[in-house]
Amino acid sequence: MQRNKELYQFLLNKAEQLTEDWYASLDKSGTGVYSSTDPEVIKGLKAQNLEFHLHLCKIFIMKKDEFFEEFEDWVREIGRDPEHLNTPTPLIMREFLRVREQYMDFIDMYTKETEDLVSQKSIDIWKYAVIEAIDVLMTRVVEEKSNHLNARIEEQQQTINELSSPLIDLPNGKALLPLVGDIDSDRASAIFENTLEGCTSKRVDHLFIDLSGVYLVDTRVAQQIFQLITGLKLIGVTATLSGIRPEIAQTAVQLGIDFGEIRITSNLAQAISAEATPS
Image 1: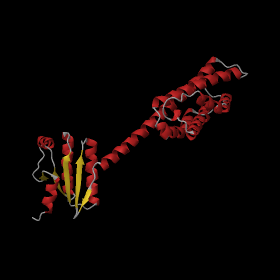
Image 2: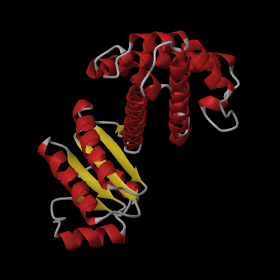
Image 3: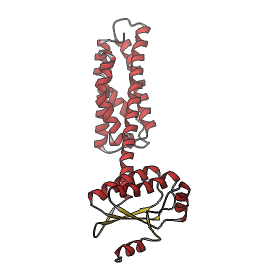
């Protein structure tokens, strides 16, 4: 067993020294949190490192599952910390490995200072316990950071999709959806959802969809655009398409999409003018 209350107490008493030694030997020439000269950032970094040591030494007095469960709050804090999010992951991993070496040295220090004879087998067990714990914690921090960054990217992409498919109010229950740029499948899905919700909430009965700024779509996206028109029809909204480029028209024809019941004009001005002209 790796349990040893004396070793736990030894490392606990050395926690502050571990932090100060670690920071003193830190390579501060890189980027991210480790190179910061901001006193508050440095103070926070040292506090996080000290908390790590106060938890880690408990590997010698706690059951493994309870030990890692107690560490989860620290893992989430580091993985979501803005300073660490802006630090390259290889640098974070480097510091975990440096701390691991610190513990190897301090375990050797403990075995020399203790009056009891310590077998090499016990030393190996203690060191393996630390190595395993730090490797698991390093992996968890990297995973937490990656998951948090991916979530932020998804949120940003959703915002971009919403901003890139604005529903512009026009008088008399009409609205304009100007689409610009390339439309991939994710953006097409966002356009579909946002437009249907927007038309419902704004009580739109006629929507002008202008495609003159769209230069490239694939067959799946073209199908989704025309499915949008079907969806609009189901909620009682008439759609008029304008500015369809030849490439999009060709794709639609290849898909067998029927233009028969869709209002189409060559440009937006013509679409609005035609709607404004009394029949």
